[in-house]
Image 1: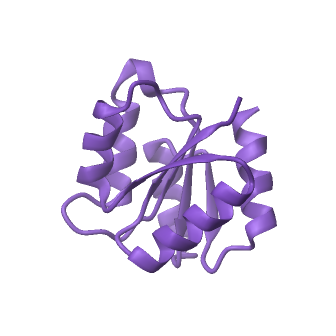
Image 2: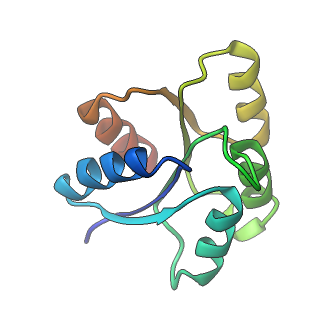
Length: 123
């Protein structure tokens, strides 16, 4: 059974890179363009994703707001959320952890490390 990954990034290029990397590793990929769209996609999915990968800096609803909203739902507290961002600031990492992020990966990402991280948090 393939794992479903929800990716949220406002960059079309990054969404395409994620989709190519994850699909070639056997994952089912569902995409959203920003945090607000991510919430809408989550609500319309038939089942919860196995892992969510979100950017931080996005219009309408940023990654922090998205994570906080997901974690506010009792049904979704256990879904692993990986932050994939160009940010490497310790303060932002701490803020993401407090919001409920499971892990932090800095762009540009290493495809093998990303897949390993997904497999680790989804286990």
